[in-house]
Image 1 (cartoon, one colour):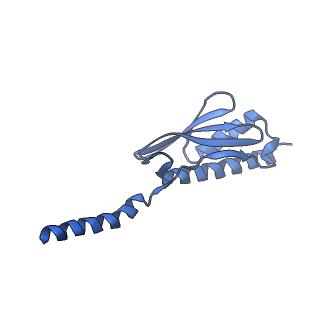
Image 2 (image 1 turned 135 degrees about the horizontal axis):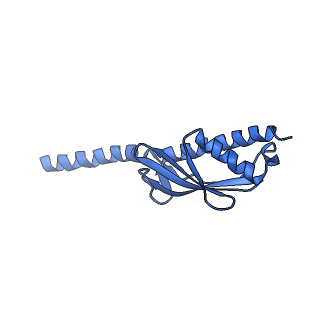
Image 3 (image 1 turned 30 degrees about the horizontal axis):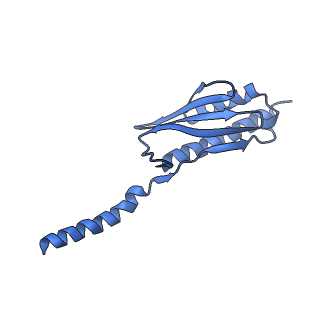
Length: 137
């Protein structure tokens, strides 16, 4: 009788804890062909590269050139990190996850903190390109 009760309690506890453990999981956010706003569209490809780097620095992304029209960016926080590829042209940019550590990535699922990083990076890039474009005559 005690053994049955113990098994039942274990099952119920597992059912209650599972959603809490999975609550931080989300589908990986990649940004595909995000249009550069009208004011930013006046910029050269080199100016876009420089302004994407400046935008990343605002939230401590480490960026490096990774070929023509491409940057590699790394975000690190405590025991978590994400490496993304940022490709860009004079009309759009894309952000794609390359690798992660400590973010419990399983296929297309990842800790939702990653998606927050990408959401903020996208907004910062848009803001930076827009501001830079307004300064172009």
